[in-house]
Image 1 (cartoon, rainbow, N blue to C red):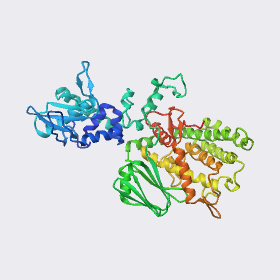
Image 2: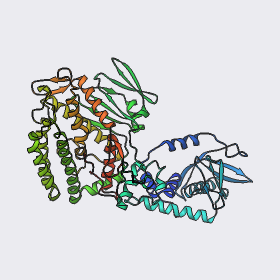
Image 3: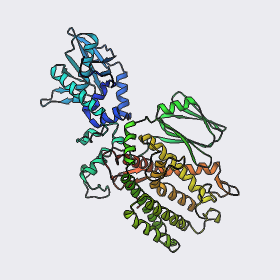
Image 4: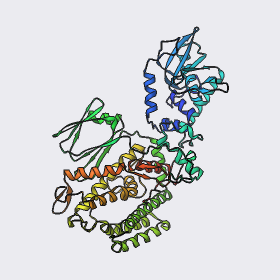
Length: 565
């Protein structure tokens, strides 16, 4: 029995050894934290393995089967085996190009080599016959690398297995790969964010794309997607019925049926009393599509996500956020980002001809005073007090950003929340509900626990971490778009609002209009002040959540740098 046999550890996937030799952080993210993302390259590789391709011109047949070994502690599915000259040969298919030696000879990449050797030793054990050779077929060039399965290859395999088991026991993510070119084709680059960590490590200035003197060849690669790849499906009809048809969702309403392919959706948000079948929910969970329920008034009710437990991620989160100094620093940065955005928005909106700077000046002075005291605040309570003073001053000045010709019915009378008592506050509350749902599903997608925050207290059913993160985005994603829409007179005071004695709610037409404005804002781009990359706001929210996780995962100091210009 080999030293790798164990009764307590599950076997290693042979594919994980390929990831290990490619990048140790990739191995850790996939095998320890169970984060796996399928990009176009991954899907193309799957299609290649599903095709019954010939091994080469002389060997047209192919066999594929599961292999496993308790002695090696490995399991996997070999692409193919072929008997050549009386001996078995293991084959592995790769869609890319081979490695070349100094004389141009065909060589296998180290990660491909260890994978093929692992299959060979398991086939040897499975069949009870010696396997002295493995081959890797590179389809981009139609060439084959031949690998001896000798003592040196077996020793390298043992070393790789030992390192894999060592990383499995670790609670610390390995460092970013030193070679940035390795990250370019990695499916987990948007999760790992290697270029952001390299900027911190090098203390490098952010390259300005508008600067003609900057050298684009020296700029770090942008591996985080700038735009949304999928879109949110909002279901606003109360009698809507969502079902599944093959790989699509069917939304049935009185107006007819709408069929939406699942690959086009990143989340379903059900407003009011729409229904969804178990089969549709199962499709969503299988495709990592969040399902959320929001009340007719716009308050977040519940959310469902297929994100795995990701125990190591949440252990690190718990450990970090139980430290008072970590909570204080994150709160300080969050409050500073929020108050600074509020101040800048008021300053920008009250300058120029026809602006009402005088009416907002007292609030602006109070915001500046609160902002100046934030760096010296020594407790969470102090920061909460400063944030409260700033918020009160900000909402007192917000009406000064509205145009003079606006109907009186669209002007706010102070800040009212539960329930909103005027049309303007109704729009704000509904917008904040949309933002809450977005941050909630983003936290779950990234793998963080929404119930464990650093600023807000867990006094209600509202998850504190959602409330913490959304503070950064209230002004750019909700306040600015609502004020702009009101000033453009996009709202009909009678048709878009339902007014009762003590509250104001959106009608069906108003709800659809508010959702459209919010989604349009998410599609607009803004340059992140740290990375220098222009991102759609929907991606900006995801980036900030991932940067938050880096506060306790080896690259602190990146979170909450977003500011309004």
